[in-house]
Length: 512
Image (tube, rainbow, N blue to C red; front, top):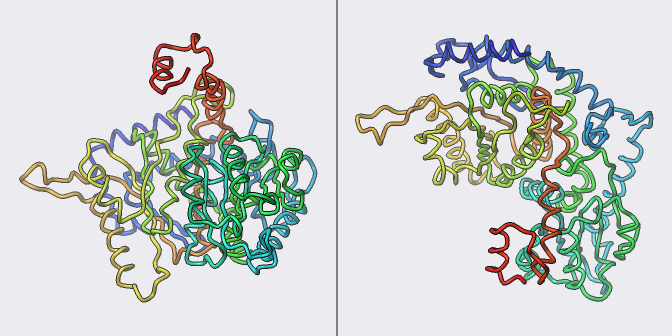
């Protein structure tokens, strides 16, 4: 693989003075540098990658073993080697037969849990599940953090056009302000509380759960649901077993919205729409498994990311959905990408040989145009941009606004590439700045499933090429451990073993 990396860098050096616009001298540039899957189109023609570079990148993917690693993941092999686990979030949306883990088909359990979720959601949405006083449940507060919060919170907002169930509020931060704000306009007599924590020990989630329990008052347990695999702990908390929905250890938190963690989304849009969401994810799985690498959307998006991160040395990427309902998607993808590929050690324990996970950030358009696009167009650092846009909106009476939205999206990607010359240096925009565009017919549950699965597989492919484990997150644990150790010091404990800065801050915050 070292020789391919060298050839890629040589290609970049030889074409460094060539502008992206020059590549469009080839009338087939767009057709050749775009790909489609089930109605979704990825355009990566506005990048500096040429045919020779793409050929080398595809060779890199093959030599890194992307295809074999992909097949091992779908086969239920324990590719998460540091935790000795399979990686099978794809099984939660699987619609094509058995999925084996250590010789056992996990699909009957997956389908059983999905059916239980559907029965519960239907009963609550139809008013058959009632509050403690016999009234209907009209609001839901979902308590979780990280993958137990970002996925459903993003999904509920994204599918707002289909939201016909109870009002859903989300609480994640241990800051008491978060629960206070979420609950201040809610009626505890009409509210269901969902506590999402696989181990039922996550300190932020369990602290908020205790606060919610007190807020609900007498009979609180009858208005609580747990999403957890720790049945002993949920029982100790007082939540009945028939109100607990669990999932296996082969589902990582940031990949878990497809199963019980997605219950708030199912409550919002209903089991039928949730099934469409799963179908979209499964369709992208099938495309990823069977499309040739040269036409494979997750692979090509990943190779574009590799080109920008490792060959062009761009350390960040901006996710820019021109869809207000996707305003939480950049934060969701930030966790998916940075928690997965923010690694400095390869699978064999050696330091990585290439820079890995870029900084992922972004905001919905057009709001971002009036915030950070100045830096995108004229800043000293080049930021690859990933635009998203629907052909059709959900507000037919406001079609003119959606047309304006589309015009802004297309204009920004063109402006980044073309730039603008001016005699006044401060007016000039250098251009030659790369972008991709993901276009889809309409933001439906199916489309949302496609988008999330596309990015999951993109992160996976990049991780394979970098030779890292994309499915653990040991760096997250260090801060948690130290916070637990610091808590007694905030309550008057001996801080003499701490560094001068921490001691000074403890004093400034009136600790001890």
